Image 1: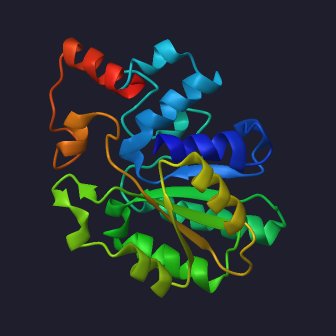
Image 2 (image 1 turned 90 degrees about the horizontal axis):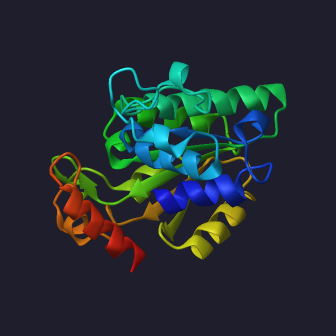
Length: 234
């Protein structure tokens, strides 16, 4: 999701450059287990000390393994139980509509979110209230912890069935992402669903080939880490 959140925070969300203290647009991470990517981006943007991010998941660290709202002021809600933050994003978008706030709400979900009934209920509500200030982005890597997701998830059919305007894009292509986000902002009286096709662990062969994309299944050494960094920089 690195390319997706980088594009959102550095180009798409208003004002530019985006800063959470001026939250006309906001970002919600529903696929909470992916939060280390968000922490890393915060470090690059200078919102947090990159050295502190290395305390990830340590006891007492504010950089928890899932987004924890009380511990990080840059978050708009806690998440991790799949589907919960998707429903929060709908509530935020609806509230903004009612208050006349022109800011948009961007919510990143994964295939796991689409397995949860609360997500589908949220999509139904978003469609009913015509929340055209709400954009769901699906990080569609077709892998889940217990195997390939294509057996259970048919995202285009499911999102269209709930009345979203659907766009499909290469989730690693900055130019394509930029164009898709800009074009989708013109949709009126419909929430937007962007299906970003991605490769889990892209750029590191060991992760790309792992059935779950390395989600808790790979043990690496310092030597492995150095090799992975060299792959990414090649």
